[in-house]
Image (cartoon, rainbow, N blue to C red; front, side):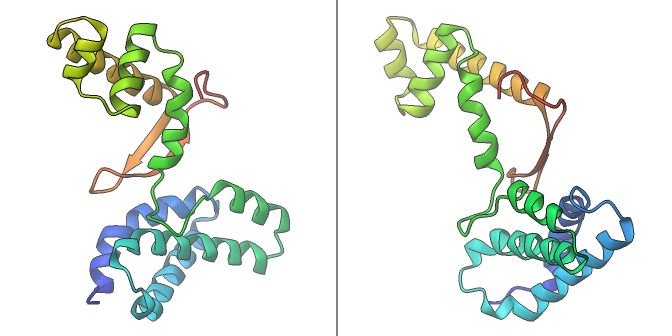
Length: 184
């Protein structure tokens, strides 16, 4: 596998720095941890067998480096909080899944006709044409319901959370705008 660390630095340094700074308050410690993460990446890149899991692998290294920082500085309580707040799986890392968990309760807050359109098209995988036939409405009416339902969901999420995306459109970080989102 031919992955160059300098290109990884260009792609991941800023998102990783933000990821780390949300968990470590001291700026100097943030810089040290970021450097340590890239040292580990450089030393261990040859062990990565599946390039598709690069994103998850890098964030797992960052998570473990943050935990090591707290462990080495005897912050036992913070280690538990960090482990709970950073959910990195061995599969492709993406916070999209975490945000998806918020979408399901938000769908329940939609007006019934939009809720029904979203559930049928997004979760039951029926086409918009099939939706129009099933509901006895025009195709353009079905398309409008789906689009309006998606827009309402997007507005709910953006009212609740600040999202940060990578170059490919995946959510790499988020934070709640309020302590408790009414929909989540």
